[in-house]
Image (cartoon, rainbow, N blue to C red; front, top):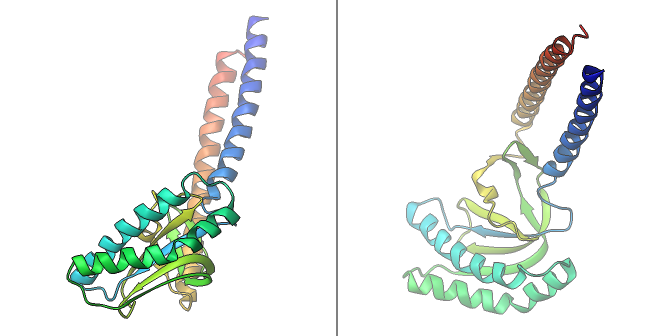
Length: 209
């Protein structure tokens, strides 16, 4: 009788665990919501000095904008706040470059069609496309970029540290997709094996095998 009750409790807990795991997987996948505003900063080049300048600009602009939007929960309000502060962002970039002794020109634009390459970050693929963003371009803007999600505030995640996949490199994309699929299948098989072992142990312990 006691073992029967324990078995019922085990089944209930197992069902709850499966449900929680499925819910958490769905939630975890959507790091960048559909309605989001990004911040992208393009360096003049990939030289050590130009990348250093990019990071200086990043720190100043990111700190300023994050403080402006951190308590906002509606994207329309975030758009208004960012639009109103574009002149201030230009001023911040100009002062940062001047203080660093950098004489490159720059541009600051808030657009809905800023181009982003495909990005792989933390096992997730973010498709290439045109996204709403503040774009800061220093000099020729041909160096490696830094970007984050400004709204909702996700700039603590540096998506630039992921791997970029060129849109034209279809073979690389296909290879990556296959690798991800293989990893998922392997993980599924391992999870299933672990589940079978746990169930076998419990059934044996309960004297039901």
